[in-house]
Length: 496
Image (tube, rainbow, N blue to C red; front, side, top):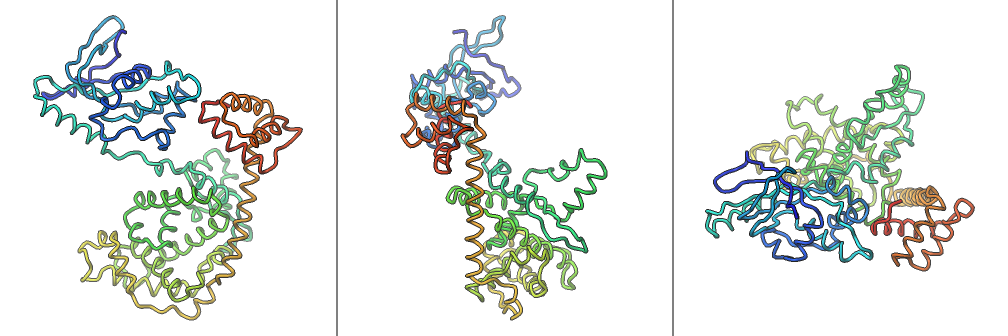
């Protein structure tokens, strides 16, 4: 009734438009969408993508569970309009009317507010939801064709900016948490004369290694560094580099840490979803450390070579290791490098060292070949054509390499054992999560689920057992059903 509070961003004014920053109540935004529907989004490059899309599902969850945090969690909307009217009073500056109001960015947010209000099983109150809005007012003097083109340009630019992808938040993904847990638990053989085990420090978030030492006394810090030597630090971007090199995409690794990490993150995310994390075992972690040892040996070896001329080391390293693994796969089809053996010894075998040394020179010559596809070597290394060229190098692996390989039967046996251990670990985690919730809380969850009619008969049986915690404990099958139900009640707005 009093209008929408706004701030005149007068510094952005031009002959074509003026801009304002507004705070629009969620109820008002939903009401406008209910009245005008898709006509409100004609200037938007996308229509509503349904609540099954990951982003919209998260918006809906926030509306149901934490509406008071919607303003903080949501990026808001961008809109254009013409013939706007403002009113200033003792409460502030208010937008009271606008013509040709178009939401050009934020259609998903707008539609989700309206959609959730009508599709949820119980009435949703949007009164505590507020949305930030950037409003661009097109000057009335422009003709309709020019005004339409300006709206389209603003919409196109607004929707073409780089989005913050899940890869940017990947340090909190269960994969990284799991790698960190392995690094804290698994000891490695001491090297350099050390008579005790050390640990590789997996840094899933930047600065963790230093932060772990900050509040330690000098004596405890010394003990920490003895157990976690600085040369045994692995960051998440390091892991992406080692793994993508071993997987045979050195041209992606050569594109830089961020691009390579994004590729790796997407691959891990897809694999995790398909396997529910079962493929990421202790074996995976130990093999990753072995890849790190190979990588770091190659990095330290190359500068000592007579042919090296102080350039392209990073490219030579990733291409050399990728080629080495490719040659093993081609010349020994049913065998692969015994990475677990390298983890156990914490050193790279002499035959592997010799082979990497010889291959590195061949790779260098190929990367800097005058007949290469692109004149700039660094840019050439980023092309798949460069990798195809390197794979034409003729090299026969020595007979002594066979001693460093594992057979297919050995690898399958090790993988079965690792998967079995990972499965047990997951089962323990599932049951632990269930028993950490008190019986009284499970009673509350059961009442909520029954009222919402989202509980199946077998889940109800499991719930009745959970309600008797700690006197009775749900078995593994029941625990899995309870965790699945728990995720569902959260989506429906339940707060634990």
